[in-house]
Amino acid sequence: MATTALERRLFVDGEWIETGDWLEVRSPYSGDLVGRVAKGGPQETKRAIDAAERAMREPLPAHKRAEILVKVAGQLGRRHDEVARLISEEAGKPMKAARVEAKRAMSTFTFAAVEARKLAGEMVPMDASQAGEGKLAFTLRVPRGIVGAITPFNFPCNLVAHKLAPALAAGCAVVLKPASATPLSALLLAELMEAAGLPSGWLNVVAGSSAEIGDVLVEDERVAALTFTGSGDVGWKLKERAPRKHVALELGNATPVIVCADAPPDTAATLAANSFSFAGQSCISVQRIYVLDDAWDEFVRDFVPKVEALVVGDPADEETDVGPVIDDDARRRILEWIGESGGEVLTGGETNDRDLIKPTVIANPAHDAKVSREEVFGPVVTLTRTSSLDEAIELANSTRYGLQAGIFTRDLRSALEGAQKLEFGGVTVNEAPTFRADQMPYGGVKASGNTREGPAYAVRELTEERLVVIQL
Ligand code: NAP
Image (cartoon, rainbow, N blue to C red; front, side):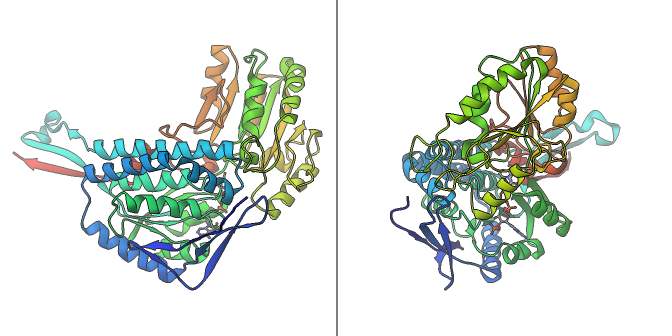
């Protein structure tokens, strides 16, 4: 439970500003006030873009950018408890998961610092053609320009880190709009970046009405790139509205896993642990498990008791595995989807005495039910009995999403078949597809997005090649 409510201003042009209007941040668990954040709009967003433009007129050398990133990583380590607690309070994320997120943010800044130091173009072998003889050519990687970044509620620290750290590594100034439900971690990161020596204008954080701030970021021609993590409906519309900007989208998934008869013995435990962390509100939370006939009985027998053993409760408690979903609307929608699944609810399917949805397992839901086709973003997993690997792959591929998928088997041929045929940005073998290390190329295909994050890949997205040809 939040003890003292924080009050945070917006960070624009190196100043902490008030606007006369406030956004309230409430605990999704208790409803208590966690903090108040100054609410910005078009005026603050324009001011932020002006500041970013001024900042980029005086580029920061790579060693300075790397130094700032390393300092922030160090501060995230030193202030780990505070960072994890803030994530937990504003997002209702269990401390166990909030600690993992806080540590991962350190890793994101650390890898971005490496990228800042090695950002370079490449030589072009000019004398490989007659036309190029007598010339020397190479490419420079130059920052695209001002980056407009928009982030979701579910990883309020590390997904903000995945926007801010690579942008600085690339030499781009940023205007960030964090999720309205969880803006406090973003503002803490801004505080750490300022304390690490980031000059004015390189980072601006404007919380407030998404439509108003989004409109300015879309319409202002000085914003060269938009980087968005969130739901597909919002993301693809942004891209349509900004045809001349570079628009990078990290969107949702309805994460599938295939369990073969020769899956390793700890498969049920791994999947039970990875299907419900942060109440399933991760874009790669395991949602649809396709179990081959021969594995079905044993898997169900192992999996359900492990799910029932998860501790549901107060996110501030270090023992809690599953806490609340983000708000009442989400809770109502998830319960509705469970109710109309057409399958057998093996466990859960209802709320506990604190109105938290119990981890829910549904056997054999209808193929066209929402839990089978859409992103649940809640503590719900479906188990579907399948007769062959081909059928399981076809079902796994049958939604519009394509972020990450997993396959559990000890047979190399089945594993490679999964890797080749599953139409996803990433495929994990004998590991839950919820797995992400921050240096990985991470991103989706199909409706799940059009980019890869992970500092090395995001830096590539946020810079462009400039060719230099020299007549010798
Ligand atoms: P969301 O509702 O799409 O919101 C994401 C961000 O977009 C928020 O900052 C939101 O602001 C903003 N936004 C909403 N409408 C906007 C508009 N018209 N113009 C500009 N910005 C707008 O998503 P969410 O509920 O926070 O997050 C859950 C979704 O994110 C899920 O689909 C999940 O899978 C996806 N996700 C994907 C990844 C990935 O890496 N692929 C990672 C995490 C989450 P407000 O908060 O003010 O509404």
